[in-house]
Length: 266
Length: 263
Image (cartoon, rainbow over all chains, first blue to last red; front, side, top):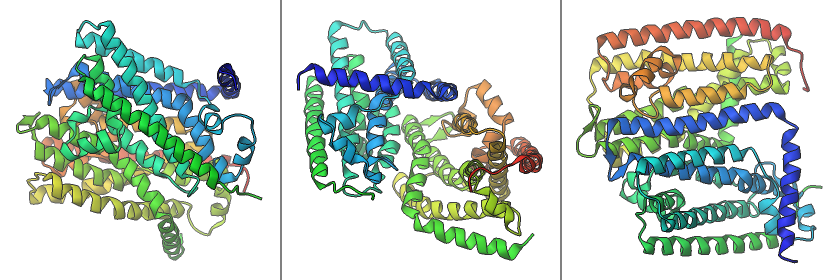
């Protein structure tokens, strides 16, 4: 397999998904409404809070806005391809459930790669744009000179967050090989909502759990801290190691699941 | 009308829902998270002092009661009724010798009992850890009962008429999404209505959303004066009448228009 082949395949998957999506035009408007509401309620939620208080345990308006921006951006990346692909594999009525995963296994490409990038929801690009707008607003609010170093560490932590999210979702998808009725992804969806706000706002035990056990904190709070230039190098290194370990562990679990898969259906 | 058949249906629905309880526990969990996030955010913001007149403990009490009320009044008619119309399963129900409303009511009761089996212990556990502060007076407790009953009735009928739109449109879900956003902003979830900026607070007082979730909570936590209480009840009853009228009108026209798809 040359280096270019995965890229070419991905481009083809994107094209096929775009054609599929364009067939449902009414859905576009509903999707637009959904995105606008999600953006508006998120923004108003933060604004209402800071109408009442100047700062919450050291978190100011701009920094909290940055967390929201990262949350929206990462969520958009998730619904761009991670969730559509993994849901088609392991969701309710997905390929593992129906036994159609056999066809995916037979294809001459890496199965984890196929399972992770096969389906795209290009509409999520709108959400991505909205997330970036919130990030822009946060930078203006912070009123800090954003140096190249800041920008670089922000991009790095954002990538770490994305990888970590991918690892978590891949873990849940892999667990479906053991039990197709597994809905732990839903529990994670609920907990991920907590990442809309800085983990520093949650009480002690929950804060630790949200950072290291269900690491939604690393996914959003750490990049926001990088953006406002308040990121200890140790935290950056720690997050990177954590994300790398999580991706390796999730991939190993996925392969173990593949070996277990015994097909289904008639 | 056939009350005995109705009771039997309610029992059967409850038993069948209990079989899927882990699914419904998860659903209840995901509905809880929204208010829970704001419980933590606001109680942290209050810290040792007050924010907008609320202490930390009062925020905890407000949001814990809100979680319970939200779970009791949440409208699930979009899938217990709307999906039946869209999928054509309504045919079978129309042939029963009793009102179709019994079926929706049966799912309603079954669902609420199953959710509460999950939410009450969780809320009680949270109360032990987070130490809510509630000055309960007899008058507030007594006013809470009708406020909650009306909130439930309003939520049920309001959700029901929106579900009935399925007779005309296939994607009424879009409306449900808009409603969810309004409920988040205006029904005391993102912040107690008293803490909203003026424009939003005026909108919250006028629109029906506050009266299905946060109004009973404001009543029991003693946030309302006499005038606020009376206007609250008046608007709650007014919106209930509107919802009832819309339900009756839409049901009559819709069922005449209905031609089944599938079976």
